[in-house]
Image (cartoon, rainbow, N blue to C red; front, side):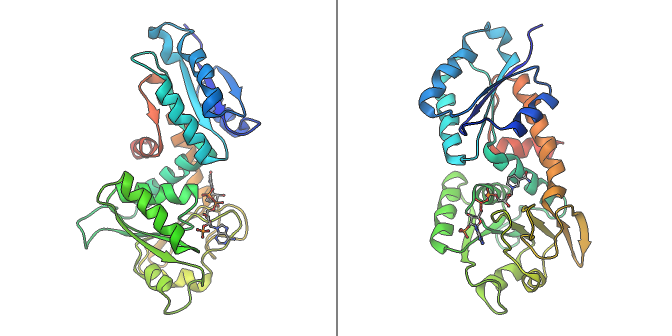
Length: 295
Ligand SMILES: NC(=O)c1ccc[n+]([C@@H]2O[C@H](COP(=O)([O-])OP(=O)(O)OC[C@H]3O[C@@H](n4cnc5c(N)ncnc54)[C@H](OP(=O)(O)O)[C@@H]3O)[C@@H](O)[C@H]2O)c1
């Protein structure tokens, strides 16, 4: 029986150790770790995956695309996709900087507490703070794909509008709004009103950046689930602890980054198993969410 070979294509100079360890834990027998991967130099690496084993054995080879530069990794993933032809392909998982698994896990945990879809007017209202980063953009996209009404908050409303536009391009009919968060969540501000109407609040700001202080947290009076994806102190939402996992707080439950992390790791491991099960698998954020929903 051929051994399971996972080929790591990572845009960073040093391929991620985290992704390597998870791959081994998820059943990869052999890791071929490549750093400094670009769309240009990826092609011969992908050919190496495609042409070394017969088509019947290609399911024992798979590719993981990663790296801290999410846009660069997505360009590599696209080149990988275009390099395959017919049945000469291997399973692929795309999870640069953990953005796809993290966003998928956030949406899976939110859905445990609030129905995300619904008709216009009665749909779940979600707000994504720091919604312009790689993780926040994907959280917004996945929530919109489930039918939620999503507000993207950013210190720059222009950046928020760009993200809303790219979400709408991928999710036809997405119900999107944007809001500027620069002035903070002062009483009576537009941000405070948007927070007050949200059923789901997700903070996806940069590591160590506080996006909602205690008063801002208190403004989330309708929230059923509050998720802070920042694990680096101080908290992204004051009062949320990184280890929180459905900790009740008034009418809401709180999740911190580590509380979401267990689901993220399950999604990651299940996805590695999936790319060894099907050469047609090309797992992006939406596919990883489906895996998370099935766990
Ligand atoms: N648990 C996990 O496995 C895992 C995996 C990946 C990421 N994460 C965490 O998820 C969060 C989001 O990750 P990311 O890579 O998307 O983050 P990011 O790109 O570093 O930042 C996200 C957004 O935060 C806002 N921001 C940046 N600096 C800020 C500041 N000083 N004050 C207020 N807002 C600021 C920016 O939005 P605007 O400029 O538009 O306001 C930015 O687009 C991070 O906390 C990260 O550590 C966790």
